[in-house]
Length: 324
Image (cartoon, rainbow, N blue to C red):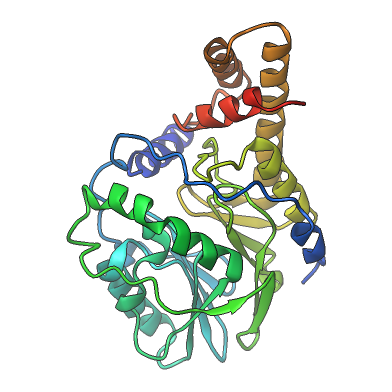
């Protein structure tokens, strides 16, 4: 029953849609694929996104609360200040978050960061109180300015009211990482490399051994390739950059939190299987379309408990088209 409920919860999410030092220079040295417009499906992004419900807020660790929803919203509370990760879809969602922050940490300075530029993660800055300090890596800001229009229009089809006064904010930019001292707890905001998007941003809380992963690591859900030329190879490399953190807890944005090391290891295993199976299919002479069907079937067999996102097939196609 528990497994069925978990799968149902993930399916609903998808339908609506410093203990270890991390070497940031390794991420910076990655040769990024050229920035290209994301692969946007012809169909709208799921259905109308429900407003966040703060009555379901969960305490995940000593310093971290989470409002579950589309997306999950982590709130990291220290003695001196608070960090919120993501805005929710538009200003109405951000108002819900702001009220919950006031309940949890009345009067404390508020920081905000975004895991990536998609509107349900970044378009609600206008719903936060004045004085909120927005932090974002330069690479994410550049991607937002280049490509936010396509994703915005895709979400607006079913969420026009929520996005009627969309506000992405004017952030303080940083290059690869920035660490906040929130009092008795620290939040390390960092870019490790391209995955779901070029500017995917993670947050590591060393005191709680917790890692907020955005769309980069999910729980029993396959990856969604929406980053233009970014393929499974780049995504796998990014996973390998931050895996040495060995977090106890991973907090994804569109699936339930879970055991950190296991979720990262599982994601690495899935990405490795996708790459290996696709190369083998191409080597055996299968066409691109036949390879997609064969590899999808193989992945279903290897990961039977996972929800297969349709956009995972785009990752298979990218591997097939590349020269080894």
